[in-house]
Length: 453
Image (tube, rainbow, N blue to C red; front, side, top):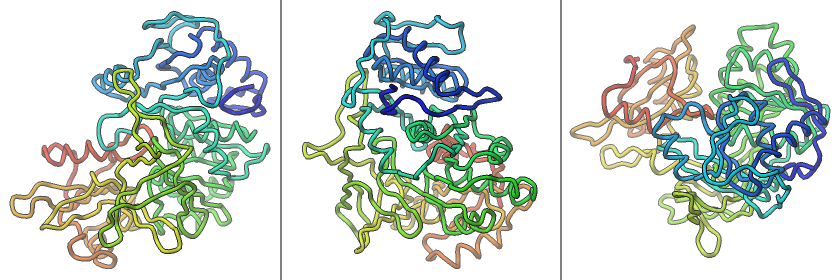
């Protein structure tokens, strides 16, 4: 049995032309476990998606807490993450089997000491708002998250994971599918062409909204791919799915179900939308609201156990179990949630505090817009100017007139961007989210590679 799945493998896993059946998957995980120090912290570096998954499952068998090193981290971010995680073993999956770089404890025989209360995973925050932080999680916090998401997967389902497993969003999607007994197809990294091709056979896909938008654009332009697409369920996390994107999905793939969830690396799932409103699946409390908007606090058995700093666990929850990542939200009278994003993404302009995510959700629905990030440009009089950085569709770019019309139709004057910039691609984190902190830094420094719209 694999502890995180709560069962023996019953699925096939495909990657780059290789398919492992359930027995082969377990055999590879068992082999990986034999070289790991039982019950210690392990970092997995390099390797393709299939190698990473089998070694992660092997570490789970050995009762280890595992960090998946993100290959796109800068040298300074990588060093900082490893300093905070303090792994007992750093395993280079690009090297020959059995070789590794050791730190501290030597490898043992992979004794199976795993339980629900023991730590199994060292996720990192996405880095969209700054340097990645290292978290620590118990098996139980994630296994209970599987039930909270649901989906009703069946053995006949094939779940596409089109992004790197170093992102907790995609790792969660893969383990959720294996837990349900569904087959899994892994891509090493996001490729819209690869995802569109794999969607011929996949019935379920885990995405962030920008990826969904790009996939729909490809299907809209290819009647053959669109006709052969097998997707019946799209699972979106990482950012809000705006109404225009949801309508595009319905138009391009009639009958395809959209399941949207809101969560964080710290809290796993917080709320789920299966049509209608975003509904909490754990206890939530919107504190100190002003005009209905306050800071969202969460109390949940799905939450993490704390941050790691120089190898030491730093609890983040209060004594009675509440914690927050600083998201701003509104809780309506019917209990539904509207999440407005992090306080750190707010823009201070003309004595007003403006939420970037609200503006982004409006502009993202405009024709010719693949994605958008709203941030601040410094201004001597107003403090900050609302600045929209638009990732354009190069085949059908939007006009400034069209973008301004979209803003006028849905936003009050103070929330309308004063500066409009176009880019071919927004800088992104490993999970596919726009790298907000990096874009803001480049805007302030005047080094963002962008043109006036």
